[in-house]
Image (cartoon, rainbow, N blue to C red; front, side):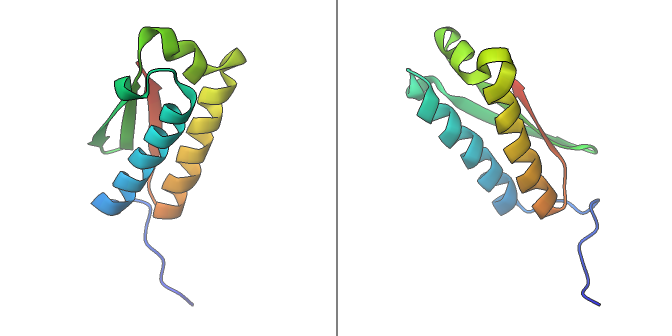
Length: 93
């Protein structure tokens, strides 16, 4: 039987960087002002919280109709975090 990481182990900086880059890439691809996209992360006992900041006029593009774009970004982030054996969430500021 293969040994697997427990979900409580801290993710490596490389895995966090990959999640951050994923959010940044998606956001920059859909906004009109890609230079205003800023992604920060905070880590606590529940996992990593990524905070996405975009220009005010681009918030609608990032959220999408009925929140579908934001939900899709959160789903991709959760999948990547699950593969890394951790938890992650996305806040749009």
